Length: 121
Image 1: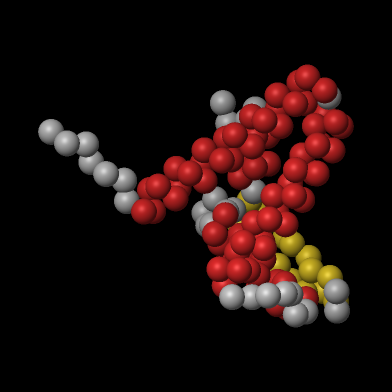
Image 2 (image 1 turned 180 degrees about the horizontal axis):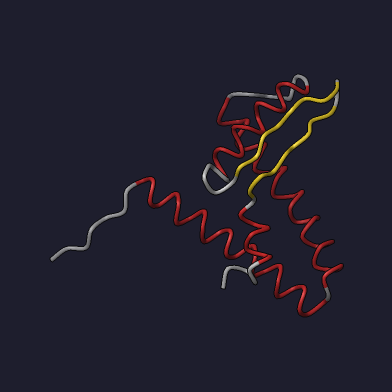
């Protein structure tokens, strides 16, 4: 009897879960070896790099060449979160609070949930 194939939604969910598992476990192992402060600093550097690359790739797929203003950035961030951390995995909202400022309000964050729970192990 042939194995059942995954749907596109199941594949997306599994890939997101595996990436978050990797991210949480990587952080915990670095923290165990080098301490929380060093792990946090390295995670911030890696996170900025991945976010920059991911947003550039997403913008290219959307046909966007540059961020026009803070509202445009908010819209791009909403699209990115819907792609990388869609509900119900993540519950976040973005609000323009000034000409050059956005406030992100997290009600649920899967990465922090995994860190709090020992990396989802």
